[in-house]
Length: 295
Image 1: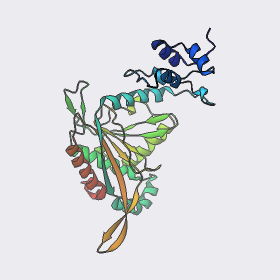
Image 2: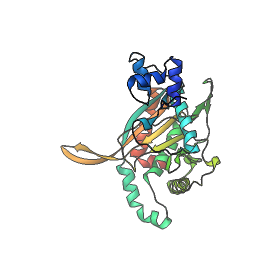
Image 3: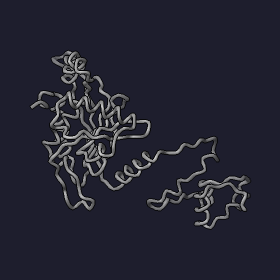
Image 4: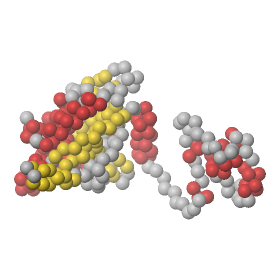
């Protein structure tokens, strides 16, 4: 039996390239052989792994220092496979926009007492769900899905909004059904309920599918922009980051203005840049003048 320490992937690559790892270890004067050693032996030219083959990533990390191991949950592994496939197969583009949220914050402030009386926390996310639902009604090509072969576009006569929730078990995306038919108070209540039950891992499978489009909000954490990955069979996803203060000049006088960064990723097989720009502009108008959401 070989006394040389090497991971299974290192041994496989050595076998594929006809390299005797025991001889190589003796030549290098040590007991451990890594991928770098094999590449150096091959003239310093690293060989690319075949497409879809991740066996070459199987590195013996302990050869470089202390490590600990932690099993990845089945839920997280499933989500990782789905997102990896989506990012590989979908030609996705992200359109960046920003909207002033002065009016939304003023409404939230003026309705604080009513929110307390109702026992509902009226978050900005409720406004964004309402605005997105209205925008999806105005742009039916976004409220659609492609068949697996890309030959058929299915337009939906319902508007369901997925809400990405960060939990200790991984990212969960419960869905608000018929969001376009619900008022702000009901949306705020459902968002709070779904988020709490997601954290407690009490969301059922029937509450996580069939979204028209999803929202991934990092506003409570930070960031200025990001590229959310489209979750098929949805055609787009809306990303929100933390509101920042910009300066607006009015007749030479500076005025602080709260601005919300918006990131709209979309499937370029069904939607193009002009579609995304118009969609984002419509969404921006609703956010900046929330009275339009009530019509």
